[in-house]
Length: 219
Image 1 (cartoon, rainbow, N blue to C red):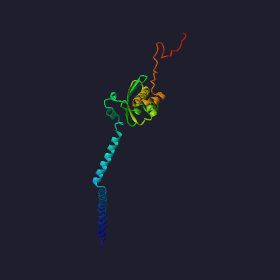
Image 2 (image 1 turned 90 degrees about the vertical axis):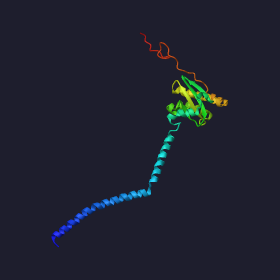
Image 3 (image 1 turned 135 degrees about the vertical axis):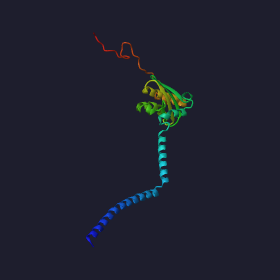
Image 4 (image 1 turned 135 degrees about the horizontal axis):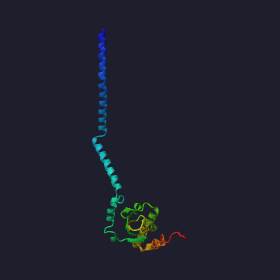
């Protein structure tokens, strides 16, 4: 065997290994990808994927619908109130009017679970979460043990939130008298039927406020 034949045979071997190594790696990767795809198709058929996606979409839409209930969503509270108060406030049977300072509140009671809606808004949102004002509007119902027996619908105007909250309290107490005359004694005992007549005293001429005078100067 000559040297030229040996070199030609070695070059042929090296060329064949270089050529064959690339297709082998490519073929292996292709077979892996195709086998993985087939495995996924066998484990998760397209019908199950479609069903799972539709189930997820249905669950998401249900969650959105639950979060947009008429009582919770501000856009729909007005429709909710109209559906509960057929004929408006004047057509209701259990109604009371409360006043405090310059605030006036018309209150309607209906059997329910203890919702408070003031001017088509949730009472906690309308009264800015103030615990004292929220206590004012709940006191008449709590006194009689009706905190979870009636829904309260209010139209309030004039004055500030503090005056409106106290006006709502008086309106609820007066409305509860139409439910039963026996409620008068416990409400009267707690002072919930008394109209607070205190108002801001008017400013006087020559004074800075109702009674505050300017500083005295001798000269």
